[in-house]
Length: 134
Image 1 (cartoon, one colour):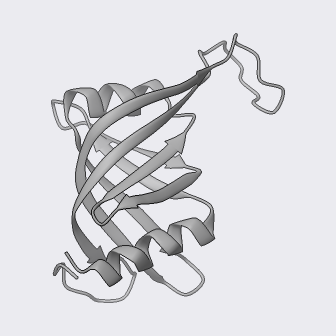
Image 2 (image 1 turned 180 degrees about the horizontal axis):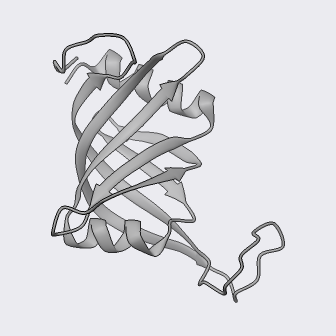
């Protein structure tokens, strides 16, 4: 994996203020979530933090393979980082009330971190491209 591509991907996600997290359950049923924070923790690990929905957490518990998308639709430039969730950290659990979170049904509100070991970085764009590791 190219360390410069890794740094560019993390920087783009940080500048955008979000990253998409694609996961699948053990039967292959896909699910996509958005996370608000991504940080590089070393040369091949990122920490992603969000109020993840139960589907994402169940998926990565059963099938730790994920795809992370940092893409700027304005410039049509981005990166897909594929890898494995190595750890799930429960950062905070609220008592069912968050004034800035509007829900029709009560759901547990828990802030999680996913620690992901990135194995491969690919270009992500609308334009024709090859899925070749950067």
